[in-house]
Length: 159
Length: 106
Image 1: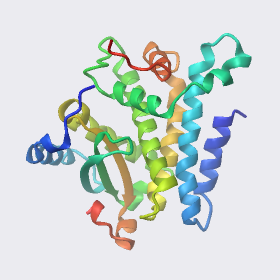
Image 2 (image 1 turned 90 degrees about the horizontal axis):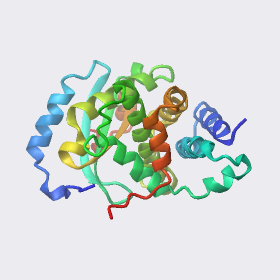
Image 3 (image 1 turned 30 degrees about the horizontal axis):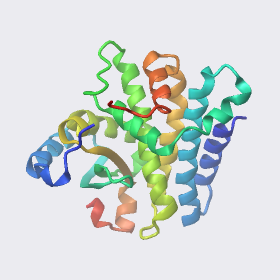
C-alpha cells in the first residue's frame, strides 16, 4: 500500500474512533492533508523516468507553492480552461480548492488550541480528502490535470 | 495575481451577493455565516462557516452535501475573480452549534 493510501486510511480510522478525543479530532484533520499532499506528489512525479528517484524528486515540492498553485487554478481569469470539458475543470478545481482548504485547516488543527474542533468539521475534512482520492484518478490523464501537477513544482515567474 | 486589500471590499455588495447565493442552497443548509480575514499565509480570504442540518453531516452524506454547497457558493460568488478573496468552507452540524454556540457561525 502506498504511503498516501495508508495516511487516508489512518485518517478514516481516527475519525471513526469512539469516544473521539480532541487529540483524535486534530490528528484526523492533519492526516488527510498529508495524505493528499503525498498523493499529489506521487502523481506529479510519475512521469520521471527513473522510478527509483521519484521520492528524491518529491522532496522538491513545497507546501506554500503547492497551495499558491492550487489557488491560481481556481481563478478563471488566469486559467480559463476554455477548451476543456467543464466537468473536468470542475473536478480539477474541487481537488485544488480541497488541497488549499485542507492545508489551512491542518494549520489550525496542529497549532491553534484556542478553540476546540467539532467532530463534524473534522469529518468533513477527512471526507473531503477521501473524495480527492476518489476523483483524481478520473481526470489524472487529462491535460489540465497534468498541467496542474506540473505547476505544483514550478514557481510562478512573471519576468 | 493581484489581490484586493480587505479594506477596499464593498461589504454591502458582497453581502447582497452572498444573500443571493444562499437563496439557491438546499434545505440541508441551516445557516451561512462568513467573515473576511487573512488565511495562515496572510492572503485576504473569505471564510464561510456553514451550519448544516444533522442529516447532511452523517459519514455517508457529508461528502456530497458539503461539496454541493461549497460548489454552489463558489460558482455564485466567484470569490477570487470578483472579490480577490481566497475561499474557505467549513461545516458543522446544527446539533454541534446548539451544543457549543460559536458567534463565528451565527
